[in-house]
Image (cartoon, rainbow, N blue to C red):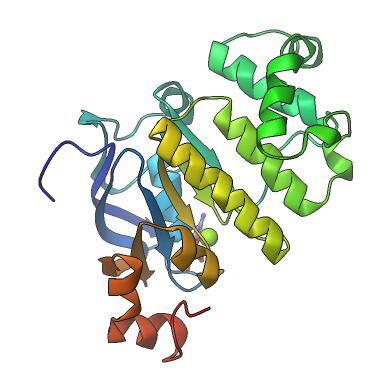
Length: 254
Ligand SMILES: Nc1ncnc2c1ncn2[C@@H]1O[C@H](COP(=O)(O)OP(=O)(O)O)[C@@H](O)[C@H]1O
Ligand SMILES: [Mg+2]
Protein backbone atom coordinates (compact mmCIF):
# COMPACT_ATOMS: atom_id res chain seq x y z
CA UNK A 1 0.00 0.00 0.00
CA UNK A 2 1.95 3.00 -1.30
CA UNK A 3 1.31 6.08 -3.40
CA UNK A 4 -0.89 9.05 -2.46
CA UNK A 5 -2.89 9.00 0.78
CA UNK A 6 -6.04 6.96 0.17
CA UNK A 7 -9.44 8.23 1.22
CA UNK A 8 -9.96 5.16 3.40
CA UNK A 9 -7.23 2.99 4.79
CA UNK A 10 -7.84 0.17 7.26
CA UNK A 11 -4.93 -1.71 8.75
CA UNK A 12 -4.99 -5.00 10.62
CA UNK A 13 -8.63 -4.73 11.74
CA UNK A 14 -9.61 -7.32 14.34
CA UNK A 15 -12.83 -8.29 16.06
CA UNK A 16 -13.73 -11.31 18.16
CA UNK A 17 -17.14 -12.26 19.55
CA UNK A 18 -16.85 -14.47 22.65
CA UNK A 19 -13.47 -15.74 21.48
CA UNK A 20 -14.59 -16.28 17.88
CA UNK A 21 -12.45 -14.30 15.44
CA UNK A 22 -15.01 -12.69 13.12
CA UNK A 23 -12.40 -10.36 11.56
CA UNK A 24 -8.77 -11.36 11.77
CA UNK A 25 -6.26 -8.81 10.52
CA UNK A 26 -7.92 -7.12 7.56
CA UNK A 27 -6.09 -4.33 5.68
CA UNK A 28 -7.07 -2.47 2.53
CA UNK A 29 -7.39 0.99 0.91
CA UNK A 30 -10.19 2.67 -1.00
CA UNK A 31 -9.34 5.72 -3.11
CA UNK A 32 -11.50 8.77 -3.80
CA UNK A 33 -13.86 7.95 -6.68
CA UNK A 34 -13.10 4.26 -6.40
CA UNK A 35 -15.82 1.60 -6.13
CA UNK A 36 -14.62 -1.42 -4.17
CA UNK A 37 -16.68 -4.56 -3.52
CA UNK A 38 -16.11 -6.64 -0.40
CA UNK A 39 -17.37 -10.13 -1.14
CA UNK A 40 -17.32 -13.50 0.58
CA UNK A 41 -19.68 -16.16 1.90
CA UNK A 42 -22.14 -15.53 4.72
CA UNK A 43 -20.30 -15.18 8.02
CA UNK A 44 -17.03 -14.11 6.33
CA UNK A 45 -16.92 -10.93 8.42
CA UNK A 46 -18.05 -8.33 5.87
CA UNK A 47 -20.70 -6.61 8.00
CA UNK A 48 -18.41 -6.64 11.05
CA UNK A 49 -15.71 -4.95 8.95
CA UNK A 50 -18.24 -2.30 7.86
CA UNK A 51 -19.32 -1.77 11.45
CA UNK A 52 -15.75 -1.13 12.54
CA UNK A 53 -15.25 1.41 9.74
CA UNK A 54 -18.51 3.27 10.49
CA UNK A 55 -18.07 3.15 14.26
CA UNK A 56 -21.06 0.87 14.99
CA UNK A 57 -18.66 -1.69 16.46
CA UNK A 58 -15.45 -0.97 18.34
CA UNK A 59 -12.52 -2.92 16.99
CA UNK A 60 -10.25 -5.10 19.13
CA UNK A 61 -7.26 -3.99 17.11
CA UNK A 62 -6.18 -2.24 13.95
CA UNK A 63 -6.73 1.28 12.68
CA UNK A 64 -9.11 3.21 10.44
CA UNK A 65 -7.75 6.23 8.56
CA UNK A 66 -9.69 8.80 6.54
CA UNK A 67 -7.51 10.84 4.20
CA UNK A 68 -4.59 10.21 6.52
CA UNK A 69 -6.48 11.12 9.70
CA UNK A 70 -6.67 8.41 12.35
CA UNK A 71 -10.40 7.84 13.03
CA UNK A 72 -9.98 4.63 15.01
CA UNK A 73 -12.60 4.37 17.75
CA UNK A 74 -14.58 7.41 16.55
CA UNK A 75 -18.33 7.36 17.19
CA UNK A 76 -20.80 6.99 14.28
CA UNK A 77 -21.87 10.63 14.80
CA UNK A 78 -18.29 11.87 14.43
CA UNK A 79 -17.70 9.69 11.41
CA UNK A 80 -20.91 11.00 9.84
CA UNK A 81 -19.60 14.54 10.36
CA UNK A 82 -16.29 13.50 8.84
CA UNK A 83 -18.22 12.48 5.70
CA UNK A 84 -18.78 8.77 6.22
CA UNK A 85 -22.27 7.56 5.35
CA UNK A 86 -23.60 4.05 5.22
CA UNK A 87 -26.58 1.94 4.35
CA UNK A 88 -27.35 -1.21 6.28
CA UNK A 89 -27.91 -4.86 5.39
CA UNK A 90 -31.21 -4.50 7.22
CA UNK A 91 -32.74 -1.19 6.22
CA UNK A 92 -32.91 1.49 8.87
CA UNK A 93 -35.62 4.08 8.26
CA UNK A 94 -38.35 5.56 10.44
CA UNK A 95 -41.37 3.48 9.43
CA UNK A 96 -43.90 5.96 10.79
CA UNK A 97 -42.51 8.89 8.78
CA UNK A 98 -42.84 9.60 5.09
CA UNK A 99 -40.07 9.01 2.58
CA UNK A 100 -39.38 12.75 2.33
CA UNK A 101 -39.37 13.16 6.12
CA UNK A 102 -36.78 10.42 6.50
CA UNK A 103 -34.45 12.10 4.03
CA UNK A 104 -35.18 15.45 5.67
CA UNK A 105 -34.03 14.03 9.00
CA UNK A 106 -30.78 12.94 7.37
CA UNK A 107 -30.22 16.53 6.19
CA UNK A 108 -30.95 17.72 9.72
CA UNK A 109 -28.38 15.32 11.10
CA UNK A 110 -25.88 16.77 8.65
CA UNK A 111 -26.73 20.34 9.64
CA UNK A 112 -26.62 19.28 13.28
CA UNK A 113 -30.10 20.50 14.16
CA UNK A 114 -31.73 19.25 17.31
CA UNK A 115 -35.41 19.94 16.90
CA UNK A 116 -38.54 17.89 17.01
CA UNK A 117 -38.20 15.61 14.04
CA UNK A 118 -41.25 15.80 11.79
CA UNK A 119 -41.75 19.62 11.60
CA UNK A 120 -38.07 20.26 10.96
CA UNK A 121 -38.01 17.55 8.33
CA UNK A 122 -40.81 19.43 6.56
CA UNK A 123 -38.48 22.41 6.41
CA UNK A 124 -35.97 20.25 4.55
CA UNK A 125 -38.56 18.89 2.19
CA UNK A 126 -37.36 20.60 -0.98
CA UNK A 127 -33.80 19.32 -0.70
CA UNK A 128 -35.10 15.90 0.28
CA UNK A 129 -37.36 15.64 -2.74
CA UNK A 130 -34.52 16.69 -5.05
CA UNK A 131 -32.44 13.85 -3.68
CA UNK A 132 -35.33 11.39 -3.97
CA UNK A 133 -35.56 12.41 -7.61
CA UNK A 134 -31.88 11.52 -8.00
CA UNK A 135 -32.40 8.02 -6.59
CA UNK A 136 -35.54 7.54 -8.68
CA UNK A 137 -38.34 7.60 -6.08
CA UNK A 138 -39.57 11.19 -6.10
CA UNK A 139 -43.07 9.83 -6.70
CA UNK A 140 -43.01 8.06 -3.31
CA UNK A 141 -42.07 11.16 -1.30
CA UNK A 142 -45.36 11.35 0.61
CA UNK A 143 -45.73 7.67 1.41
CA UNK A 144 -44.98 6.28 4.83
CA UNK A 145 -41.80 4.20 4.83
CA UNK A 146 -43.79 1.36 6.42
CA UNK A 147 -45.73 0.99 3.14
CA UNK A 148 -42.73 0.81 0.78
CA UNK A 149 -41.43 -2.20 -1.10
CA UNK A 150 -38.04 -3.33 0.16
CA UNK A 151 -36.19 -2.19 -2.94
CA UNK A 152 -37.61 1.31 -2.54
CA UNK A 153 -36.59 1.38 1.12
CA UNK A 154 -33.03 0.70 0.00
CA UNK A 155 -33.29 3.79 -2.21
CA UNK A 156 -34.57 5.88 0.70
CA UNK A 157 -31.59 4.70 2.71
CA UNK A 158 -29.24 5.65 -0.10
CA UNK A 159 -30.84 9.11 -0.31
CA UNK A 160 -30.39 9.47 3.47
CA UNK A 161 -26.74 8.54 3.13
CA UNK A 162 -26.27 11.00 0.26
CA UNK A 163 -27.77 13.85 2.30
CA UNK A 164 -24.43 13.84 4.10
CA UNK A 165 -22.54 14.45 0.83
CA UNK A 166 -20.24 11.64 1.88
CA UNK A 167 -16.58 11.31 0.93
CA UNK A 168 -16.95 7.65 1.84
CA UNK A 169 -20.14 5.70 1.18
CA UNK A 170 -20.45 2.27 2.78
CA UNK A 171 -23.25 0.09 1.45
CA UNK A 172 -24.01 -3.29 3.00
CA UNK A 173 -25.89 -5.34 0.40
CA UNK A 174 -27.46 -2.30 -1.27
CA UNK A 175 -29.41 -4.25 -3.89
CA UNK A 176 -30.75 -7.10 -1.73
CA UNK A 177 -34.47 -7.52 -2.31
CA UNK A 178 -34.42 -5.59 -5.57
CA UNK A 179 -35.39 -6.90 -8.99
CA UNK A 180 -32.35 -7.44 -11.28
CA UNK A 181 -33.15 -4.45 -13.53
CA UNK A 182 -33.51 -2.20 -10.47
CA UNK A 183 -30.16 -3.40 -9.15
CA UNK A 184 -28.31 -2.29 -12.25
CA UNK A 185 -30.07 1.06 -12.12
CA UNK A 186 -29.10 1.69 -8.50
CA UNK A 187 -25.49 0.76 -9.17
CA UNK A 188 -25.36 3.04 -12.22
CA UNK A 189 -26.41 5.84 -9.91
CA UNK A 190 -23.66 4.89 -7.46
CA UNK A 191 -21.11 4.75 -10.30
CA UNK A 192 -22.14 8.24 -11.39
CA UNK A 193 -21.74 9.55 -7.82
CA UNK A 194 -18.31 8.02 -7.52
CA UNK A 195 -17.09 9.55 -10.75
CA UNK A 196 -18.79 12.96 -10.44
CA UNK A 197 -18.36 13.62 -6.72
CA UNK A 198 -15.21 11.52 -6.26
CA UNK A 199 -17.00 9.61 -3.52
CA UNK A 200 -15.15 6.50 -2.34
CA UNK A 201 -17.57 3.56 -2.29
CA UNK A 202 -17.18 0.29 -0.40
CA UNK A 203 -20.01 -2.20 -0.78
CA UNK A 204 -20.89 -5.80 -0.06
CA UNK A 205 -23.04 -7.71 -2.51
CA UNK A 206 -24.13 -11.24 -3.29
CA UNK A 207 -25.13 -10.59 -6.90
CA UNK A 208 -21.94 -11.36 -8.85
CA UNK A 209 -23.22 -9.61 -11.98
CA UNK A 210 -23.44 -6.42 -9.92
CA UNK A 211 -20.03 -6.97 -8.33
CA UNK A 212 -18.18 -7.77 -11.54
CA UNK A 213 -20.15 -5.23 -13.55
CA UNK A 214 -19.68 -2.21 -11.26
CA UNK A 215 -16.69 -2.64 -8.93
CA UNK A 216 -13.34 -1.20 -9.93
CA UNK A 217 -11.66 -3.50 -7.45
CA UNK A 218 -12.81 -6.57 -5.50
CA UNK A 219 -11.73 -7.76 -2.05
CA UNK A 220 -12.56 -11.35 -1.16
CA UNK A 221 -13.04 -12.31 2.49
CA UNK A 222 -13.34 -15.75 4.02
CA UNK A 223 -13.37 -16.67 7.70
CA UNK A 224 -12.38 -13.20 8.82
CA UNK A 225 -9.45 -12.79 6.43
CA UNK A 226 -8.85 -11.24 3.02
CA UNK A 227 -7.94 -14.09 0.71
CA UNK A 228 -7.73 -12.16 -2.56
CA UNK A 229 -7.88 -8.65 -3.96
CA UNK A 230 -7.67 -7.18 -7.43
CA UNK A 231 -9.54 -6.00 -10.46
CA UNK A 232 -12.58 -8.03 -11.53
CA UNK A 233 -10.45 -9.70 -14.20
CA UNK A 234 -7.70 -10.58 -11.71
CA UNK A 235 -10.11 -11.86 -9.06
CA UNK A 236 -12.13 -13.91 -11.53
CA UNK A 237 -8.94 -15.74 -12.51
CA UNK A 238 -7.89 -16.71 -8.98
CA UNK A 239 -8.44 -20.41 -8.24
CA UNK A 240 -8.62 -19.79 -4.47
CA UNK A 241 -11.57 -17.46 -5.00
CA UNK A 242 -13.50 -20.02 -7.01
CA UNK A 243 -12.63 -22.66 -4.46
CA UNK A 244 -13.63 -20.82 -1.32
CA UNK A 245 -16.30 -18.49 -2.47
CA UNK A 246 -18.15 -20.28 -5.20
CA UNK A 247 -17.40 -23.92 -4.71
CA UNK A 248 -15.38 -24.11 -7.92
CA UNK A 249 -18.06 -22.65 -10.17
CA UNK A 250 -17.42 -19.80 -12.61
CA UNK A 251 -17.10 -16.40 -11.00
CA UNK A 252 -18.98 -13.41 -12.29
CA UNK A 253 -19.72 -14.60 -15.79
CA UNK A 254 -22.87 -13.11 -17.24
N1 LIG B 1 -22.82 -9.19 17.48
C1 LIG B 1 -22.33 -10.42 17.26
N2 LIG B 1 -22.23 -11.33 18.25
C2 LIG B 1 -21.74 -12.55 18.04
N3 LIG B 1 -21.30 -12.98 16.84
C3 LIG B 1 -21.36 -12.15 15.81
C4 LIG B 1 -21.88 -10.82 15.95
N4 LIG B 1 -21.83 -10.20 14.75
C5 LIG B 1 -21.30 -11.10 13.90
N5 LIG B 1 -21.02 -12.25 14.53
C6 LIG B 1 -20.41 -13.45 13.92
O1 LIG B 1 -19.26 -13.03 13.22
C7 LIG B 1 -19.14 -13.71 11.98
C8 LIG B 1 -19.10 -12.68 10.88
O2 LIG B 1 -20.38 -12.09 10.73
P1 LIG B 1 -20.68 -10.93 9.70
O3 LIG B 1 -19.66 -9.89 9.85
O4 LIG B 1 -22.10 -10.56 9.87
O5 LIG B 1 -20.45 -11.71 8.32
P2 LIG B 1 -20.99 -11.37 6.84
O6 LIG B 1 -21.50 -9.98 6.83
O7 LIG B 1 -19.79 -11.58 5.97
O8 LIG B 1 -22.05 -12.39 6.55
C9 LIG B 1 -20.33 -14.66 11.90
O9 LIG B 1 -19.90 -15.93 12.34
C10 LIG B 1 -21.32 -14.07 12.87
O10 LIG B 1 -22.15 -15.05 13.41
MG1 LIG C 1 -23.37 -9.19 6.30
